[in-house]
Image (cartoon, rainbow, N blue to C red; front, side, top):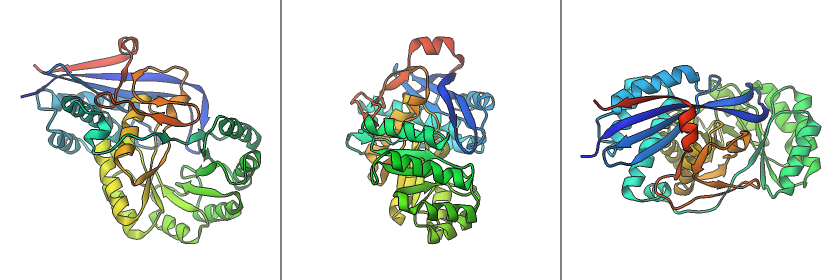
Length: 371
């Protein structure tokens, strides 16, 4: 029987190329939990989770300690019994979605390597070229318009624009971006990151109708499901849930209420691929399309997400550009991501990505072994 012999827990710290501002925070770096699961057949599965205090409620320091406890639960067990292993993690300790995401991706990666299949094929999908949006952090309207124009000149076909300060400035941001590019292209998606109340959101979205905005992500606080439903009924722009949806229970409730037009699935919120598949299934059954988004992942998490996209036709919007935030790329293998948003998968077994050896060596880490 195949067993888990060793689990490496790596706390990876990466500075951003420049500060990135959203309504919830200004970020200049990210810390990542990287999990490397070794088994008795000599294979290694690699996963990533990004704990974010202001979204998942996890701090990198506590996530690192939680990962040690989860690893101790798994060593010595069969990693190929993936449903059993992930159910054990879920029952063992409440929440911690980003940490469990790292284990989830590592176990799926390992299972695909045992099957000698790329992850998308293990999940029943077919490889395709993905066109991700590029994200523009909050800045002055003029600066954001310059960034938008540069992306469009590089061939980007969709922009995700961060908003959420005040009405006039948010409207000015979108007006400046739209006037700096085509009246109808690229597609513009807003992300307010919970910044508005219901009245403000309706006022702003009504004012922005003329600028051909595709969707507005999480305009209201995460807990305001009723407000999302009322806003959706009156807004001229489609509404997407992000911080409101962590798991299948959230997805079911939002779908049952008819509260939103789209779900934003993020692996760090859904505790990995298993949870993401459940959310997507509910969305597909309810006629709600999904976006695959991110939480400042490296190309490890982005590669896993790209493979999931190729297995789920109901995931129709792609927000995978977080690797461009960083000064350096610590990852070998995985997807190829071009500045124009084109993401291309390889046919390597699993998701194909791993930390470069020098980054493993210089990062803080812990090793849990099967005694």
